[in-house]
Image (cartoon, rainbow, N blue to C red; front, top):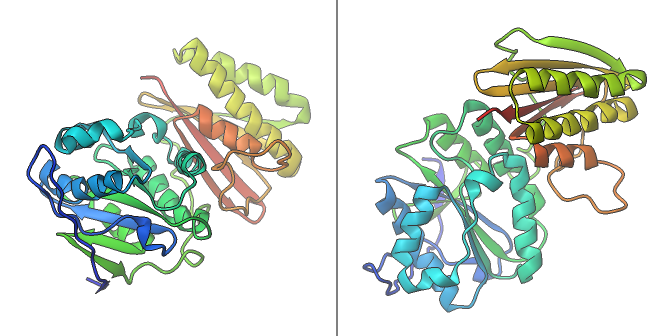
Length: 336
């Protein structure tokens, strides 16, 4: 399987349910950031086998813990933890992580609040039912985690992957983006992981062409006000709610302003609808080279990345593809 076994640390604890052995300890080993994929089968039973003892051990050790998984897994884990559940915070990953580009900031806040050392987090960015576009961005996000946290406190992030519910391509991506893989109670080094700086190319490739007719609007600085009005009117025509329309207008305004400032002074906006999703895409002649742009909260003195950060907070999905003299940023806004 392209894996090298490492020594696991198993733990057995008493909860309201029978004890479940876990494949690894928390980050208490002091080895820095431990980014591990839990590859499980068998539904909730497989998920709980790889998580319950790990969480209970962390609680017993007074380590900081945060669980951010899809609702079905969260409910199963709460029930399995019994009395421990009241000492463990849960975050709504379906909401906070719908756009994978927001997730690194969640872990930043968690580590800042608790000091980081020996913390445990369980985060599920890729769950069954995600769209192909979302899963593509999940892979890029998982790869960037290794860059974001390679230097810093010693903590453990376990990412569950449902072998029964996810496509083989998603599982293969998990093997490439996680240095450690856990399965069936054992942990192994993933030899398919190339290292934190060899794999991350978050802006490489091309986005699929629009699958529906689109409106194209060229702009310079003189047309920015008109662009805002055009986006507002178009979103209203598509029955997007008032608040959501305002969010989309603001996100597009940030991106078109970036094009004027950093992308050659001009660009093209395209807008179209695919099913229950509105898409706006800004293309210009610039290039984005900072891999974590828009994923970490910019400081008050930040000169780059603020516009992408704002777009990430306002939209359901943000996709960036960039090469010399060409950048495309596509934002998704759901009508649901």
